[in-house]
Image 1 (spheres, rainbow, N blue to C red):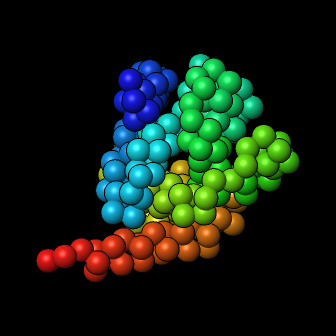
Image 2: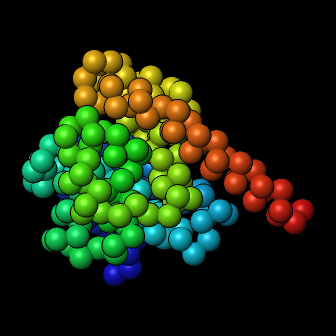
Length: 188
């Protein structure tokens, strides 16, 4: 079984029944990742795998610390032996270091998991932050607003996502610029 197929199977087994909305979101994020093939090239499979797995740390069967990027990455590393680059992307998806800081877990996250290449980090931020909780396309502005409304502005998640907003917008802009450039380079 290839990395992508294995990742879909694993994510579905952890999210589909206990968290169907999270599963729908993850599938949408993975579809978004697949759409980035023109700029990802040989990293496309890696990105799609990270996208479908990025939220598995929410699964009640593996949640331990209460911080889903850390729980998901630890599970993938310790229990599944998934490609270390996928693990790093899951660990650091969508500005996770800032949320880890809010939770007092930043040193733990940094010590256990190195950051992946910036262009891949940007791509996963873009995929996550342009996909609604139900798996549909949205804009980063709409997604950030939805997260603040859902969690509340004064919660850990609300504070973190507001702090992360400038980097999320910048990452999305960088990915969009790369996609525009890739489209301009395509022969007619």
